[in-house]
Length: 378
Ligand code: PMP
Ligand code: GLU
Image (cartoon, rainbow, N blue to C red):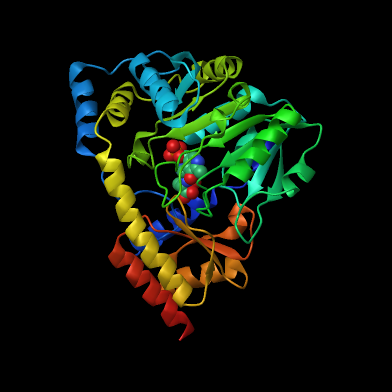
């Protein structure tokens, strides 16, 4: 047989998905595994959103739609970005894709040429680097400060004449940290001084505790070099709907639309009608879920610290990022095998020594998980 694609052979499988699949297999074998490895809200999608989707299905919205998304959704997204995020944006710049993950991949395809470097700030979500690699680019990593998880001059040192894009993700998966103004300013200045794009992944913007979300695309001079990515999975508990979006400078959006025309065409038409209801309907459901996550966050961080663990600033998203003081692969392996608690090792996010626990799980399960982990060391 001839050799399969080297490009695909060279990318790592998604650690978040692999570990939760392993937990699911253990569960199927009758083991009571507590799954804290995947970032997925455990709430149902709010009823008015599912209703809008069902109505669309019943109206016969079951055919092809315009490739960049239905006009009502692109308009609602542009309106949201202008109103809430202060990002100058028209509906024509919005490309609706099958999840924010797809938007990130399409961005890389639209922007990168072989030899182009993309700067990724660690700890970073597992799929950025594979998306860069699939699009033929090269990922270059720099780290945040371990004390406050903000960026510093190491970002500038990692830049090269080949840097084409900087990926920025606040609130962060996996650390939960929220970038302060100085970090965002440093990234924006670096992008302007070095003529780079910024991909700003803001999927956790609504899940933020005691901080205010700021979009780098709203900074002076950044509108024509920022691709803002967001979606419905986290804020509206719509992971299975597979709807995300990018708002990009027009030339980038045009490239993304071509990629989309030849690949996914567009997300499911009726699902996009549900997404319109999510954005234009009552936002209380988002706040209710945020409050519940906040209660769990306080409990989990408190319990971990009481066990003596150091944690990253848990200011956003739904993750506790924990310093293990040892080998994260061994620790997460031990927790899964001996405590039946699934977590994701920090190695998958570029920071060995740490593990990520998702608190998108019920309080009962979180309590039980903490008891099981504590029992291991007794
Ligand atoms: N970005 C980050 C930081 C994420 O954690 C996720 C979670 N899956 C995504 C993007 C993609 O989300 P989705 O494709 O479900 O919209
Ligand atoms: N983003 C979530 C996580 O990090 C979902 C899984 C994935 O798509 O990676 O767990």
